[in-house]
Structure formats: C-alpha cells, structure tokens
Amino acid sequence: MGCLTLYFVHLRLYPYIMIKHIRVASQQLEHPRFETPKELISWMGAIQAQEYEMAKWAIGVRLRSSTLEKVNESLRKGEILRTHVMRPTWHFVAAEDIRWMLMLSSERIKAAVMSYAKGHFGQIEQSLFTRCLDLIGKILEGHKSLTKQEITVELEKSGILPTTNHANLFLTWGELEGIVCNGIDKGRKTTYALLDERVPPARELCREEALARLASRYFQSHSPAQLQDFVWWSGLTATECKLAINLIQEELMVETSGSREYFIHQSWKGKHKSEPVLRFLPSFDEYLISYKNRTDVLPLEHHPRAFNRFGTFYPVILYDGEIIGNWSRSVKKNTTQIEMSFFGKKPRIPAGLIREAETQINAFYMVSP
Image (tube, rainbow, N blue to C red; front, side):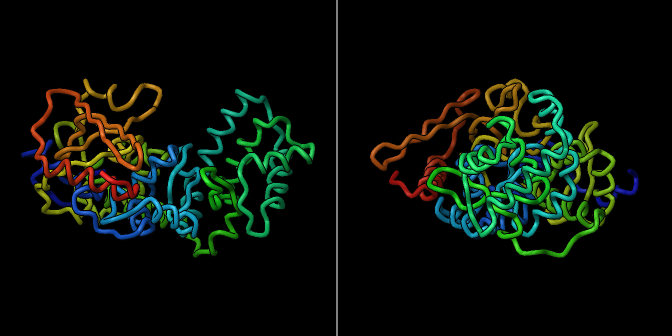
C-alpha cells in the first residue's frame, strides 16, 4: 500500500485532537452544508437506518435546518430509499445510487441471508425464490405500496409460501435482486414497492467505477478513517477496499497515529480545529457505528454505555468531538423534555450549546421546548 502515501498533515503531533475535530466536521455535525435529505445522503454514501424513526433524526441532525416532515416527504417522493444494502442491515441511500450499490454488495449479503435462512428454515429450493419474487412483482405492479402484512396475505393465497415467516426472507431477497424497495408509508407502517416503478433507470457503472465512487463518498464524509473502518462500513472484502482506495488515491492524504494508518479526504486538508458543538445523536448513528475502531472518540471503558455486545447502539451525546453520555427524549402535551446522563464527571458545557442542541431537535419534531 506504499502507493497510497500521498500527503502529510500534522496528525501525528496531535492525533486524538485532529481525529475528532476532522471527524465531527466531515460527518456534517459542525457546520452542516446541505439543505435536503437527498443531498446529504448522496454525499455520505449511506446512513444506517434499522431504527426507522431514529434514523430520520440521523438525517435531520446533519442538515442546516430540517423537520421530520421534510425527511418523510423525501421518502414519499422516492428521493431517498430505505433498503438492505452494503452490510445485511437497513440503510438510507439516494435513489439514483441504489443500483450500483446493490451491484457491489448484493452477492455478499445474499450469502449471509441464505446462511441465516438455512439455519432457520432448512434448505430452500432456488425455484421457490423465483416463483415468490415473480408473484411479488405481480402483486406490486401498478405503482402499489403495500405493507409486509398485505403482501404476505397475497403470497399465502397462492399456496406457495411455506410459512408467514418466509415472507421476510423473500422480501429481503427481492431488495437484493433490485426488484423491490421501500414504498410510501401507510401511517406508521412501512411498505414495499417495485424499484423500477420508484426509481428511473440510471447509467450503469462498471465495478471499479462503483468502488471508486463508494470510497470517495465514505472518506469525504467519515474522515479520518482506517482501512478496517471502510471494510466494516461497506461490507466489502479487504482486497476490494484496498483497490477502491487505490482508485481514489489522489483524493486522499494518509497519516499514522501510533500503529494506526488513517486516510483523510483532501477536502479536509488544513482542518486542525473545530468549534465545540453539542449534538444529541440517535441510536446506530454513523458517528460511532461506521467505524470498526471507536476508541478515537469514545474510551474503551465507556463502550458498554454506548452499545452492547449484541450490536445494539444507544442514543448518545456528542460534545466537542467526543461521545460523553446518553440522552432520552419525552413529549407530554406537545412539550418536550430531554434527559442527559454522563459517562464520567459532568463536563462544563456552555448553556448556549445545550439550548442550541435542544432547539435543533425540537424544531425537527416541531414541538415546543
């Protein structure tokens, strides 16, 4: 990987400070530059989204100004999608990116899904997948948006669905095949729709072009990051990620901190300090979950307070680049209250920063402080 040694910044002099200050800026948590969910998600590549409502706040906290309705409208219009891509979990992606991202990641996710299915359902004939996906296509055609329950009922009528539990399997497979994606929500229920009816055709990318685009998106929005972080976030192999980094080497600076090698997108060259900000980050937020190593912003002894060993991430408080505690929000009679707890001694946080963070989340949910 010697060809990746391009530029040098002063990261090794102040490694901890530099990492957290570049990262809070690159993650759009210092001075957000984007107005719309589509712009933000396209720039970041993807935002993890298995906790649907919390994931909407992960978008809102990174925009100049936003409301829950603004995010919901972007989802209704199909500008952004929520689907299984990259790792075997939900992500928000920009609609025009979905096909090339599936091209990169679907086969590896299919292998994981099939392994899970074999352990829970036993061997499933490929012909059953084909028949169920064909039927799902017919059920949804005509720009329908149907809930999982509605689709399951129709599959059961056909007599080919082994059990109702198989519906999840076939719908996920349909996502990975580029047949279905999220449709328009029905109240608080999510739906499925046909991808080709929701998203216009786009120019196909060759694999190397797609790898380069994914790497560029990741490092511009997650710098500084290590190779292992990119491997974890993308779900690709280390070999593919090394190739992707090589393909965009002119966009990257590389620096070491101890035994760790970090890649920094050139757009952050000269970034040495960030303004202290306080942000209430949602569960499964990109600021933590998109890195294999999280000790740069969260001491190891506090990891169990931010996420557990089963992969569940909790809502956390970001202050001056570090994760310092947990938060919760309650609403009574259209009035919101935020409770904060800290991992260690309560830091001296300027009252103005707390008010700013509270104002931001209240504005998003359009409730009174």
